Amino acid sequence: MGVAEHWISVGAQWIGSARADVALLDFVLVNTSCPCKMFAVTTGRTLQSLRGSSLVRSLRLRFRCLWTASAVPLVFWALLNVCSAQAHDVLCSHGDTAFEADSMTGVKVSIGPQRDGGMATRICHARLSWGKQELVVASDASQVDLDAFGVYLDADTPVAAFQIRKEEVECCRTYAIYSLAKPPKLLRTITGGEFFRAADSDLDGRIEIWTEDTEAINGFEGLLPSEMRFVPTCVLRLQGGRLWDVGSEFQSYFDEIIAKVRGEINPERLRDFKLSDGRLGLSNFLSAEQLERMSRLRVVKIQALEIVWAYLYSGREQEAWHSLADLWPAGDVERIRSAILKARDRGIRAQVDDVSAVTVVNRKKPVRVYNESKVTPAQFIMLRLYLSGLDQRRIPEASVPVDLVIDSAGKVRSVGQEGGATWADQYLESSVLEWKFIPAFKGHQPVASRLRTVVHFLR
Image 1 (cartoon, one colour):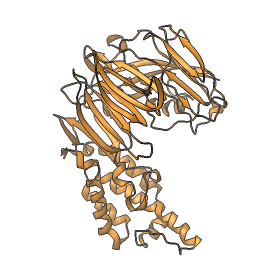
Image 2 (image 1 turned 30 degrees about the vertical axis):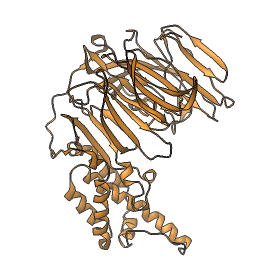
Image 3 (image 1 turned 180 degrees about the horizontal axis):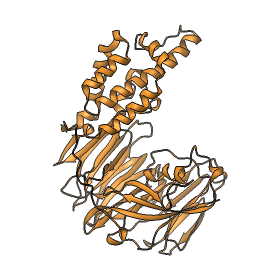
Image 4 (image 1 turned 135 degrees about the vertical axis):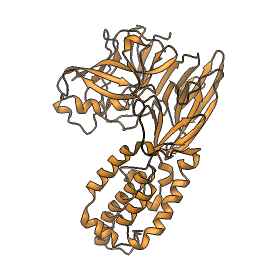
């Protein structure tokens, strides 16, 4: 099959198309037990969809992605009743998807199921290749994701940034950054985050890497990250080959977390928590009533920690300790303060080279956002529609034009619609900010750009 060919496999049945105007992209439903419908991306001339059923045990879609693209406006077709998906999705999970793209430097990325004697397996593999040479990025991995491609995380060279999870039971992923020069080389790895996302957060031309310090607080005080709404956030930036912690430059982000958590604390339960020992240890001798009380206090304990972490990870240590004294049992403050610092120091903080002391940021002038006709347009890496928790019965059949602003890291920074807000807002906003692109290029430089798509809601 040639590069322009796209195919879907359902059991032993093959449905193929060699038409260049069809681009069926990365929508995967594997081992599903719920009725599903698949959605595809087309150039506006052709739609191919495959309706699944509860009898379909495995649905896989494979495709190839070229760097250059047709100037024809892309159209996103979304078939409703899609199975729910996780908030942070990945490109390849258990060998379910294949993806290829060429960079401006001539280095190709390939991600997909690992082969065993020519047969695809349920594990993921990733490599970079140039000419007849190749470099294996990941093998025998349960998940591989391409977070950025052709992006300048530092000033010197375009890179490919991968997220790799070797075993599904692992709490966290490894973020591996490779140069796209010939030959490619590993520039940096970051470990301990559950998910990584490179983005030009404020469109000032500088790209940050956002993640959570998941491994550091996994099991902290007997708590699990899944119990928390706000695992402590790390904001990182590569500058001059050094990894900086720049959380202090994004205090407004952390202030929103603090305000949300403070607004949800129950004053009566907070008073009860401050009368406890702070440890909230469990034993076999607690009554049902005592266990219920411990469960309530555990929620307050997590809320107190989330506030302290938000101050601490945004460079405001004194405010963190003032809040700790205000929210924690007095007799346990010194112990928990020491434990918080030890956890932070063994986490992602241990991997950074420098910590920004900037607290009042003079933002640079926003970068220029190019119209797609003036640049090599942004290319899709992964598009999925997430409708979990939303009322699908209220969705009419409709076509909704959507204008995206995509930053130079390939992330959606804003979403707009013709005519302002519509009923479709909640359905789009739950999805588009998770979409990923190869960014637009002006010459060989990745740039922020506008891209118009049309979302067709079909029943």
